[in-house]
Length: 306
Image (cartoon, rainbow, N blue to C red):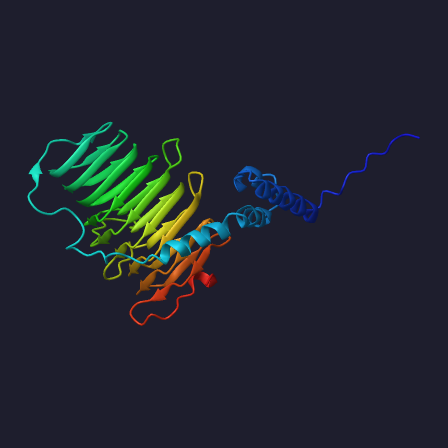
């Protein structure tokens, strides 16, 4: 008797169940799968279910980590007196920092960091800072903006970003490498000067693996149509993962936060005066707990996530 090959029907329900089974098995085994790798083979609407399953394993760990970090509180409330450069600063013609470079107590026009193990401390920059390297420390800097482009292991602390014509912080994996391990803490962002049709975010993220945004002030001032979000996590350049946004003050903006990635946690942030609403969500969701409104301290339920 000839063998009969039995094939399951290729229905939408079967495709969805199969895809979720594969994603679940991979997640439980510790494998890393990007939903984009399989989305093209799935019916419309199935990819979102798969993405939710893929991140189900890591989300509790990320949430616990964010809650633990939030419990530590903030050592300072960033303002103009405790952030940025101060004291006597010498003029310097340096605009590029390579391996093991150090720049301290200086005034420069612009700054590009191409090397690794670079330290910048107490420096006033007329324009912006572009970080392309790795193992970079930037502390007590005054500048218009800081962009991290395919860099890794970058810390920006107690710095003052003001008068920027574009995003104050811009983190992007646009040069063929994923941005990894970025820490932004105790920084002040205020007084944007946007021209033309450009939009302005306090922090825009376009591809990162491992980002901690802790105890920063993102203040836009009176609403302008160019002002977008205090924190914008965009699903671009490979997506954003392991993002913790903890105990920040986000004041003004069209939306306090805009989120397109599920692998993020917003814990104990304080929001005030968004022109439209505190949260704009495009994607399967994120973790949110303990966020409050300024000045009354009432709970803010970010996009229905808590």
